[in-house]
Image 1 (tube, rainbow, N blue to C red):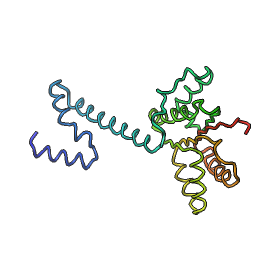
Image 2 (image 1 turned 30 degrees about the horizontal axis):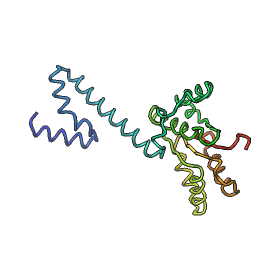
Image 3 (image 1 turned 180 degrees about the vertical axis):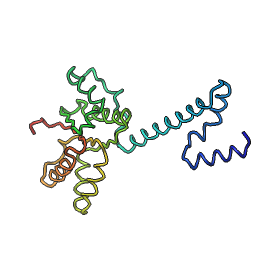
Amino acid sequence: MPEKEDILLATYLKQLYLATIRECYQQVALKAQQESLSYSQYLLELVELECTTRHNKRIERLLRESKLPVEKNIESFDLKRLPRKVAHQVSTLLEGSFVDRRENVLLFGNPGSGKTHLVCAIGQELIRRKVRRVYFTPCSILVQELLLAKRQLQLPRLLKRLANFEALVIDDLGYVQQEREEMEVLFTLLADRYERGTVMLTSNLPFSK
């Protein structure tokens, strides 16, 4: 292809934000020539490359945005340590349909039982498999952010920002001092998300508390 046409094509692809095609079209064209691919096959391969790259970059962005600890993933969690019934529930949760129904997930257990690891692993799979927007936060930090926003008259804005996430992972409810003001802002958040978004909550406290 003449150099002038190369320059024009690169310019148009840049204007169309087709970065992957702009980087790969010459290499794929050589492959298409060697393998006698049709024009449509050549175009299909380029478009597939563009879509795959965009998908992967979106997953990477969502994982960064989620604040989930990446080392706490499903590959590094020993599912065999779970009772058979719980392991089956985890398999169901990994499918992600509970987020569609805006259902909540509550994980209770003693310190060191793997609650945080498991809930983070589920959160990562929601992003990787279903491209969901997920946000992870320790409950103590979340409560302080809510209290600060309330004092600055910015609580509605913070609630709106958190509402953009389809699943909110709140870790270690038991470490929050159960003072009235702290519990009020936390209840405000949970009430705001009721039937509007999923909450995934862990706690060392018994369910009765």
